[in-house]
Image 1 (cartoon, one colour):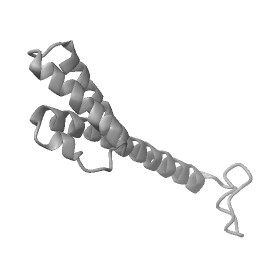
Image 2 (cartoon, helix red, strand yellow; image 1 turned 60 degrees about the horizontal axis):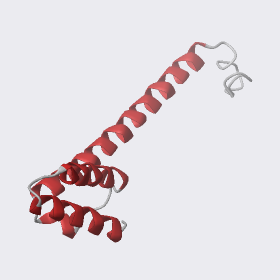
Image 3 (tube, helix red, strand yellow; image 1 turned 30 degrees about the horizontal axis):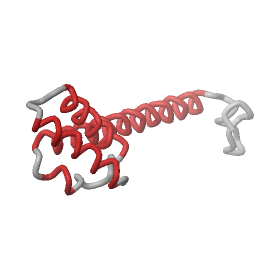
Length: 105
């Protein structure tokens, strides 16, 4: 985890709060979300803990990354099951030797 990036986000967020939620505040929340996405397996940075909006943006990024990873794992499993079903129906794979045919092997 890049502590300097977390510090930059926190500074931008603090400046935005002082300036009554300028566009910099939205930018800081977007950056916190992207930071969470990239650091999906890391704990919430200490610099974000006491700011609920930054913390939630970071966690939202982590959730997005987790959903993408889960979706990819699901799609890989579906592909694997489909390939097994195809091999099960293939006469070349169901031979006396027990080896897959050249197409599936």
